[in-house]
Image 1 (tube, rainbow, N blue to C red):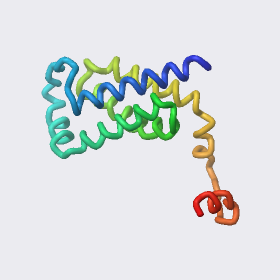
Image 2: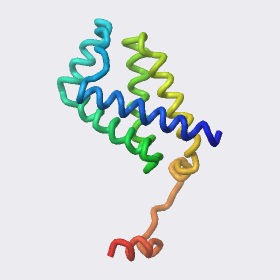
Image 3: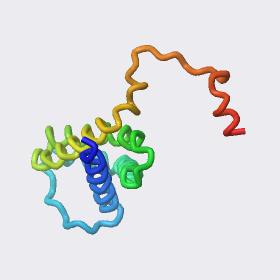
Length: 142
C-alpha cells in the first residue's frame, strides 16, 4: 500500500489538473456532445458560472495533490465533486462512467492512505478546544 498511495495521488492530481486546465485553455480534442437528457443539466451548470467555480477548485486541489501539500484537504474538496461526476455519468451520460469510476477509485485509494488525517472527523462526540488548551497557536500568531 505504501507505493499505491503516492501513485494514486499523482494520477488523481494529474487528471484534475489536465481536465481543469482544458476547461480554461482548451487543448484536448473536442468531445462528442452529451446525450440529450444531460443538456439541460450542463446548460444550467455552465450558464450559471458554477462550472467555472468547480473547475477552479479542481485545479487548486489537483495542484495540491501533485505538490504533496494539504493532501487531506484536497481530497476533502474533491470528494463531493467526484460523487457528482460519478452520479452524472451513471444517470445522464453513461459513456463516461468508466473514467468517473477510475477517478473514484483513485480518490478512495489516496484517502485510505491518509485515513489517519480523517480519524478525528469521524468521532461521534468531540468537545471544542478552549483557548487555554492552545497556547502554541496564540504564540505563533502573536
